Image (cartoon, rainbow, N blue to C red; front, side, top):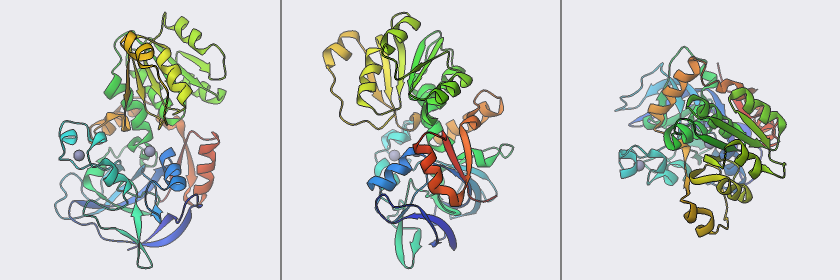
Length: 363
Ligand SMILES: [Zn+2]
Ligand SMILES: [Zn+2]
């Protein structure tokens, strides 16, 4: 079928909405009419750094309505409202033990540009286009494996839900699935973008005593306060470590690092109390750490967490439930854009004007 999709032809190319060909869903796959899609930092990385072979249709926070199912699909049917999330194999040891975010085939399935059977679903004038995260949600329709789609309640605004499939799941899952803060503990969140603010909302759901958000932008610190931060600190302050140690009476129990900035990673470690744990969520380059002094001698832990260590089919419906109860107001992060304003949405995300842009694709 013919669809409209935002194609990325080459490195740092602007998105161009073009007519492309989408194949029918094969066995275990579904055709989804995309209603809306979030814009995530990883899309910008893939556009500019060639994470997936060009030409590619990016987008990995889609939400939509199942239009058709291929043979063997058991978990959804046509008419279901779904959120699209990451791809995983479903049969490796990590998938089987409840950790599909570290599936042994995660990189191949999400970034190699092909479906599980090594073929493509998107073509333009006879040439293959890469798929991204097994979904390519920057299009009016997408074909995805049924493992990528999560059925959600029909009584919430479907256009809002796409970011639950990646950015919001990442921040909230890191707190709720991985760190699981104990009663009365303290948690510091470095970076108050969509991921960091999702961690703030999640921390509020737990029984954390101190939820401290740090960011360079005052507008984001205001948002953090509104969403549940008990304290905020501007990242330009000179004495951040002292402030955290004073608030937490000696250091934080947990940290969530979303910025990927090496100096902030080290700050995150230093501001932990002994036995504290720092979750690394931002893509981070090489960092120099004195392992004995900064980790071992105080029994600290530093751990990488991908996609909030979530099983999307379990976790995303939980987040929707919290949202409906008013306990997880992630809609406050969202700003809607028309599909043809996709380049503006990326620009606004980069310069910090918008925390979580969501493109409206169809109604
Ligand atoms: Zn797997
Ligand atoms: Zn993402």
